Length: 208
Image (cartoon, rainbow, N blue to C red; front, side, top):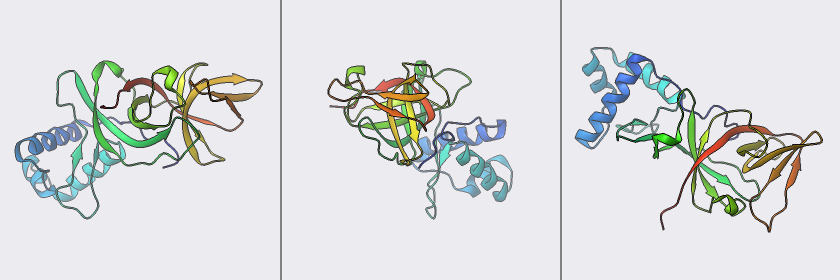
């Protein structure tokens, strides 16, 4: 994964939302995902139509499937009061920049971390550069998908020249972007070519 601006969660249409709800209910009741034929039968529509809806939902990061594997549909649905599932997209460095790895899977986060009308995703942190901000190796950060942040915000930053992604505080100085770690043993770096991919809005502590 290189570009992350398309990683947020999109909005489902009415029928797509109904399909997501059915998938979640079916999995909870049966312990496995429904087939496309079972979804089609439930809604009285054709299998190709279901396939089209599922494809759209995948593009919106509202569900995942494993190619070539039957009954592999996993929906990112609300299923607990006070919690919501968003896609955990992979690994991000809180240290020297490393490439984030896209491997979406659902993770529960408190609803109060999320605001209406925005897209969110999560990333697992590798490294210790943000420990003074309470972000430790193995923690998970919740990120609002956006392309601009204010000075001092903790942001997910893509560095095109290195083809890598990192997590730092952002400041603008003399026409450059200053990436500042929250660790006194590490020094800031200055970049001229960066792309903001999101703002950190919450942290989930790793289980000890």
